[in-house]
Amino acid sequence: MSAARRHVVVGTAGHIDHGKTSLVKALTGTDTDRLPEEKARGITIDLGFAFLEEPDGLTIEVVDVPGHERFVKNMLAGVGGIDLAMLVIAADEGVMPQTREHLAICSLLHIRTGLVVLTKTDTVESDWIELVRDDVATLVRGTFLEGAPVVPVSAKTGAGLDELRATLRRLAATVPARGTDQLPRLPIDRVFTIKGFGTVVTGTLAAGALGVDDRVEVFPRGLVAKIRGLQAHGHAVERSVAGQRTAVNLQGLERAAVERGDVIGMAGTLSATTLADVVLEILHDAPRPLKSRDRVRLHAGTSEIMARALLLEGAELAPGKRGFARLRLEAPLVALAGDRFVIRSYSPIVTIGGGTLLDTDPPRLKRPARLAHLNVLESGAPEAVVEEHVRGAGVGGIRLPALVARVPFGPARTRRLLDALAAAGRVTAVDRDWSLHADAVARLRGLVTAALEQFHRAQPLRGGMSREELRVRAANADERVFAHVLGALDAEGAVRVDRDKVRLAAHELRLSAVQQTAVDRLEREFREAAAAPPSAEEALGRAGLAGDEEHELFQLLVESRKLVRVKESLFFHAAALEAIQDKLVALLRERKEIGPGDVKDLLGISRKYAIPLLEYFDARRVTTRVGERRVLRGG
Image 1 (tube, helix red, strand yellow):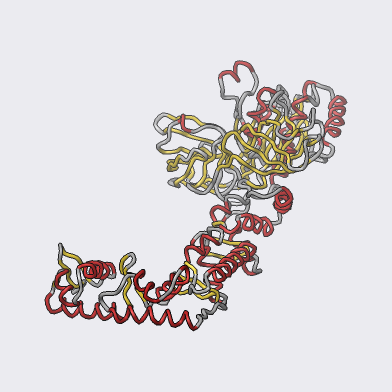
Image 2 (image 1 turned 120 degrees about the horizontal axis):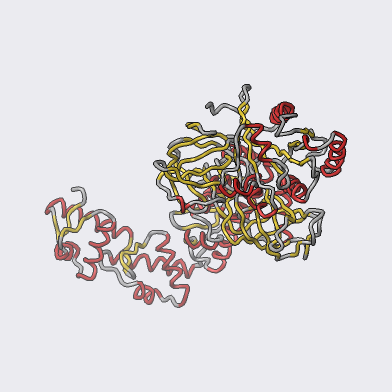
C-alpha cells in the first residue's frame, strides 16, 4: 500500500437505527459492528471502521459511530478526526433527536464538508421522501450542510449506492490535504492485544507522519516505546501519514498501560495541560445558560475529561452566545491550540456547546491583559499568534519545542514565522531555538540599568556590581537570556563588563583628596609588606579610616586587582604575589619539590602565611600537592 495515496476520513452521524452501519457495509463490504453485544442487540455501541480504495489513489476511511444517546461520548471519540460528515437519516422516521445532536456536534467541531444520506428508501413512497427532503432542508439551514448533496439510498436493494460513491469521491476531492510537516499526533480510539505481537492502538493520524522503528511516547503517561509495526486497512506499511486510519504495534507496553484518550506522538514533542484558555460557543438550543464555574464534560480528540468552566467576560454565557473562558481540567489534556472540542453538561448529560483551544499554557495576566491576549490568539493570524506566545513568555523567553507544542503551525513554519518577527525587530533570538520578545528585552534592559544606577548611588566608591547580583535583580533572568541582554548593552557602550563586575559606562569613580591619600597609603602598606601583609582590619586602622567608607576604599583596591584575596581576610599586593610566584617557581625548578618549611625559609615568613600561599598556588594550578610536598604542575 502506497503512503502516497490521499486519505480522507468520512464519519457517519445520525440517530440510532437509521441504518448507518448497514449503509457502511453496503458501501465497503465491512460489517463495523464487532462487539458481541452489538451483534446481539443489533445496535452500534462503539466505533467501527471500514474503507474504500478508489483507483485514482483516493482512500476513503469510514468511521461508523453509535447513534444511541447513551453512547454519544463514543460517537465524539470517533467524529473528532473526520474530514467529511455523512449525516444519515432514515426516510421512514425523518429527523430525530440524535440527528440534531450529531449535526450540532459536527458543526461545533468545524467540520466543513458533508452530505446527507436518506436511508431505507425502499420502505417509503417517493412523495414521502420529498417531505423528508423538506425537513432536512429546514434542519441544515445555517449549518455547514446547507446546500449539501442529499442522496437517497437503500442498503437493502443497493439503490442509490453508485450515486453515493460518486458523491463521496467528488466531495473528498475538495477536502484540503492535512499537513505532514506538523507534529505527529495520533489520538487513540482503540487499544487491544494481538497474540505474538503485543499491544496495538488505533486512531486517525491527525497530523504529521509515523514510521516503523520511530521512538514514540504515549502522552500524557510519559511511556516511551518503539513502533514495532504499522498497519492500514489490514496491510503492513512502513509509514503512516496524516488523515490515515492507523494501527500501531507498540513494543514493550502492556495493554493496561494505555487507553482511549491517550495520544501517540514523537517522544518529548507534546505536552499535557490541566489549564486551558478557550473561546466557547453555546448552542442556540441549549437548555440553559452556562454559568461560570459550572462543571462540564470536555470532549477533545478521543478523550473525555471533566472540567470547571471559568467564564472571563461575565457570570454566564447564554444559548447562542460565545465568549472566553478558562477550563480547569480534572485530568491532563494533550492538545494543541486551534483544536476544536465539545462540551456536555455534567447532569443531565446533553451537548451544550463547544469551542476552540486558544492557549494550553496560559500566562498569568490580569483580566484586561488576558482578554487582549486571547483576542490576538483567536484572530488566528499566524505571525500575530506566534508573537503573542513569545510575548506571553515574558523575560524567560520560550524555546522552539515549547512554542511548537502550543501553536498549530508545525516546527518548520513556526521557525519561519519567528525569523520574520526577528527581521522586523519584534523578537530576538537568544540562540537558534530560544526566542525573547522585544518587550521583554526592553524590560530587562531597563531593570539592568535601574539596578546599576541604584547601586552606583548607594555605593559610589565601588567599581561595579557583581554580575550574579545584577542578574538576580534583573527579574532573576536565565543566565543565557541575561548574558544576551548584557552583551548587547556592552556592545552598545551602555555598560562596561569587567570579568564578574558590571558598571554603567557613564559611571566615573571620583575620590576626594582625603580618600585618595588613604587609598594610596593602604596600597603602599601592602606593597611594602610583601610576603607578610597585615590583616585588612590592621591596615584600615592604621589608615585612619572608619565606618563603611573604609571598607569601600579597601574593596576598591580589591576590585581594581591591586590587592588579591588569598584566603578569607588575607590579602597580598598583586605585585608582591607575582614576585612570590616567581621565587617559588625558581626554587621548584631547582629542587623539584618543596614543603611549607622551604617556603618559610625562602620568603622569611611564618607558617601563617606559607600554608595559605601554597594552597593559593595549588588553586591557581601553579603547583600540585603530593602528600605534604608541592611539585611544579606540568614540570
